[in-house]
Length: 337
Image (tube, rainbow, N blue to C red; front, top):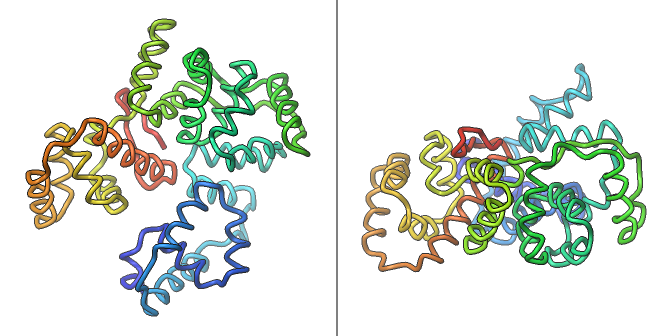
C-alpha cells in the first residue's frame, strides 16, 4: 500500500482522502482547517486526475495505519494534543496555538482576519496606531502579512516592521485594545485578556521575505536609516534563495518533490553556481542532466521573473519548514521551524 501511495505529496494524499469521504464529510473536515490549508488541499482536489483504485486504497490504508498507531487513550490528553499540534505546525506555531486552546485565549477576531483579503485587512487596521498594526500582522501568516504590508500607507511600513521586530509578547492592555478594535468589525470578539508571545526579529524577517523584491530593499533601507543595528539583525535572519545551500540534502530532496521544473529552471538562472550544484547533487543523474540541458537551452530571463520564481520556491520551503518537513537555516545560523 505504501508503494501505491508513495508518489503523492502529503497535500495530495489529504485531497484523495477527502475525496473518498464524500461531500458532506469532507466539508466538515475542511471547516477545521486554516485558510492556507484549505486553499492547498482544495487546489489538489481540483487538479488530481487518473488516480487508480489501488492508489486510493494505499492512501486510505496509510491513514488507517497512522490512526491505529496514534491514540490519546492511556496518556495525558494535553500532552497528546500538544504533540500533535507541534508535529503538524512546527514547534513555535504549534506551541502558540495549543497555548491559546488550553489557556482559553480568544482569537476569533484575529482568526477571522486570516480568511480575509489582504486589502480588506489593511483597510481595517490602516488607520490604527502602528503598534496595533504590528500586533495584527504578527498574528497573520507571514505571506499574508507581507501582502497586507503592501496596502498600508508607505509612511508607516518601516515603522510597523520595526515594531514587529521589537515585539516581545503582548501585554494585557495592548491585547485589550486589539480586542476593542476587532469588536468594531466582528461580533463576539471579546474574551479573557492574557499576555501572548508574538512578533520578534524573526517574525519581521519572515514577513519581509514575502515582500516584493522591489519594495524589500526600499523597506530595509528605511529601517536601517532609523536603526542600523536592528536592520542588520533583521537582514541576517532573512532566508534568501542562495541560503538553500545550507539546507540538508534530505530537505532539498523533499523540496524538489514539491516544486515545478519550470519554476526551478527560471529560479536557477539567477542562482550562484554553488546553489545549482547543490540542486544537481540531490537529483538522479538523468534528472540532473536534463535540468542542465534545459538551463542551457533557456534563453535570457528577466531579473524580475527570476525573483518571482525564487520567491515562489522559498514560499514552498517556508511552508514545509512550518510543517516540520524541512529545516531552514538563515544567514545568522538560526533555524526557521
